[in-house]
Picture 1 (cartoon, rainbow, N blue to C red):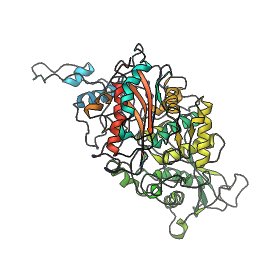
Picture 2: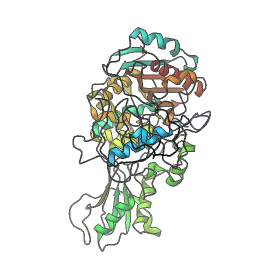
Picture 3: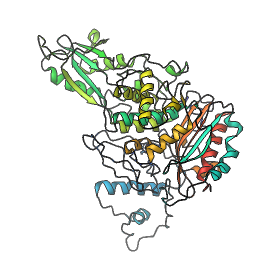
Picture 4: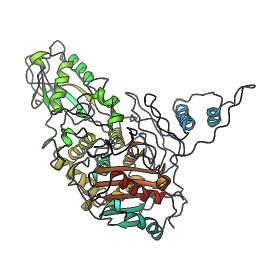
Length: 574
């Protein structure tokens, strides 16, 4: 099993021999190749305006229709700056002498956001241009300049040639570890020009790289600023409250939720008590009818519902259906985000809400039902259907970040259903798949080269061509649709974060460390990777390598994939 999408991991939970970072790539708004920030929880409240630098394709912060500044994760550092360290509670994982560079990056962000002056002697002051050490103090040995983790593309870098790319990749795509069906596409992000293809249009099982398509579709259909509501309305009888699910998978019970900054049921309960005035709550009814159809996709392997990485997909749930969110949060690193899930997320959420309203015993037992239509009047208290309160999720831009960085399958399925609802289709697996296909076609992508059964990539019946993925990444990164650039924020970075944290460390793949950022996908016999890479000349390329008939070990297959992307990173390919 694994955090990215798979539920089989021969060498461990996710196939690593040592547990890596539980987070993905940057979570701020970034340009396609920009600087990367390790995934960190967003603030519970407040917002930040972030101005990306170093790339004309950078996504704006104020989107059309946005009610105001969108809460995002910490701003990204300037292009070429090293990322800040993980939160203090997590033991430092980097062993590359980047502590000073990372600290400097954090302080630069503080300066930029708060406008404060920091006076500190030593190497940090030198990096920030602060004061030198006081006279007479023992001078510390000079620190070397911090190495860049992700540099920006060079606008004047020469375009690789098709012959150069072919010469670099042909010896690698036939590696035995990749099996007998390896489909590849490589293109230039700035021009969209195809540079290499091997079965580029062949439908292939994509595993978790499916989330790139889901992310683009929901950003286009809902917009980055959209927030998913969870409402409470007056029931048909006095004191009855109907909890109406809007499809927010991150909804928390209280401040101890799994997803930092999520909407909370305790806040909704407080609104309801105020709205009811002197009427005491007597019963909670759950309306999760917004989603329809099966709660598990028929193409999922049999162990997914109980394996810790999938869950019953319902329109109302708390903490991604995790049974014990506090435990899941504490053990996320060692389990790679696997957690026991509740079998009926909507009823569980309803019982949690009833408890918050003070109901006990038989009154705390909830039932499913439809929210009454607003109108008319009741004998006492608010009229049936009257809204008693509402809370809203983090904006879609943040949900997509989390979905990609943590490869969160439950969020992915919720996002696919948001695409369906935005397009007037049923909030179901089939509705989400059809709507995603529709949105990609409306964006001018070859929708005939994608056939989906779910939004997460857990289904083995999904098919995507490598060329569709490179065209999708190009579209998101070339500035023509700036709202789509949010898919890059959560992409793991080679040798640095997320599912790529422990990769690109061998001599044969070291060229890809810090310059490959990509979404991975793994099911038994299926391995995929798609994203961007900065060449040795500074040219930004997009790639997709999909193989769905592997038979070797997971480590060998991943090494073979990494050699392909590292070859692109290490050459000018002319």
